[in-house]
Length: 115
Image 1 (cartoon, rainbow, N blue to C red):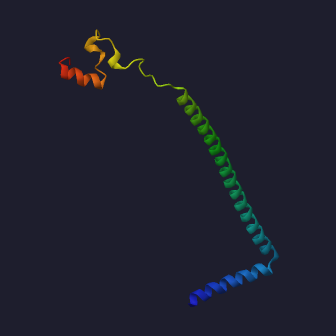
Image 2: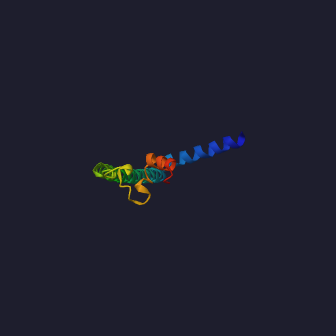
Image 3: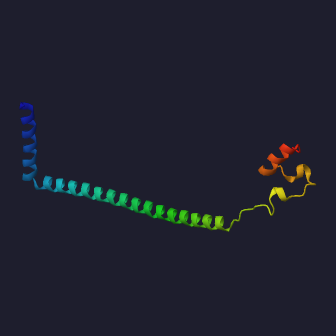
């Protein structure tokens, strides 16, 4: 406790000297002003970087939206490539009768002894 009081007394004496000495007070004010200016500059730099990151993210979002729209339009333009005729309408003269891909005919031909 005595040590704590000693530290407080020392700090108080130092403050009294600063108040009594205009040059020391001016130096302290200058130091505080400089520190405040440095903090403002650092905050401004962080804000600038954040704004730049936000602009970049917005540009990337717009680009992604455009790519998604383009992909959606392309998928709508794509048509399913179904065969003109189903497998069971193919001529019988084809190897395996052309029915190897038709589940209906594959089951039937197995029962009839064709497969």
